Picture 1 (cartoon, rainbow, N blue to C red):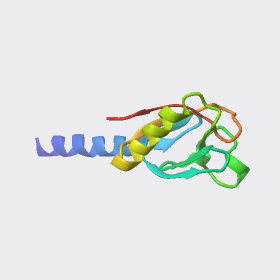
Picture 2 (cartoon, rainbow, N blue to C red):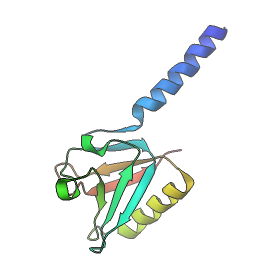
Picture 3 (cartoon, rainbow, N blue to C red):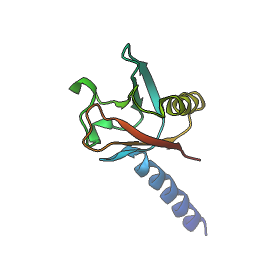
Length: 112
């Protein structure tokens, strides 16, 4: 019984770590590491995932970040969610617009 419980717990831990990553379409079960506010009113987002795995061109081509563009109609709502998630260390899913310039954020949600 102990070995079964140990294997279940170990499997749960390994499964949780597998999903904390970025793939072509977004970053899943990541935390918000850093937010940058630019003079263009865009917000750059660094997560605990590897944004280089996203299928998009990152801001300036120099670093791997997701961009919450000023032109996004839901910018204020997304920014509020991002700040709350960062402050509370809440895990999130952030989707990007595939093949977008600047890895444009499409939508996001928090993960329980």
